[in-house]
Length: 162
Ligand code: GDP
Ligand code: MG
Image 1 (tube, rainbow, N blue to C red):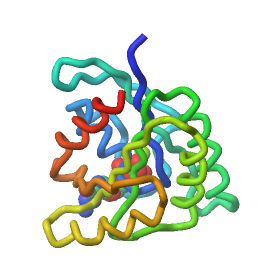
Image 2: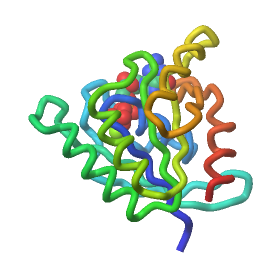
Image 3: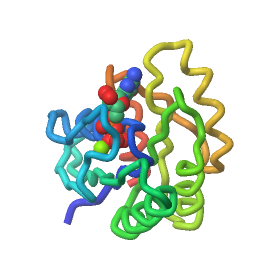
């Protein structure tokens, strides 16, 4: 079986957009309405000649009560099936309760986590990525899933962690 990279994070941070970058296709469903991705969707990807499986997670209604709890539960499931976790956050919003709930799960997981500070569309926004150190996950890596900014660097980091 191929190594598994699970992409976790609260709705609307850009997980599916980043998954499309990683697989080099437009198959993961990206929606302006958050919470569209089904529970877990699996894709195969190749980077620098290495094949791996990418799992896109989602499917929560962000208006539902207890959303942070359900996101944390989904992160827990993803953690159990993954070799590396890609934790996606949104620098334009900053840290939310749901981000903190995911971070708590990941800190306990004992598996390698790569922290993506997404929606860094330009150099100015890079400064905002520093705020994500507060999640206690390690270095926030600024990327723009939408424009592809630094997505290759992120993939290198993921493969290093596999
Ligand atoms: P998910 O719910 O985490 O899977 O998020 P999606 O991939 O569906 O994206 C949610 C919204 O954020 C969509 O409108 C995307 O176009 C937008 N988005 C994703 N990545 C970026 C980015 O790097 N920059 C900006 N500005 N918007 C982004
Ligand atoms: Mg999605």
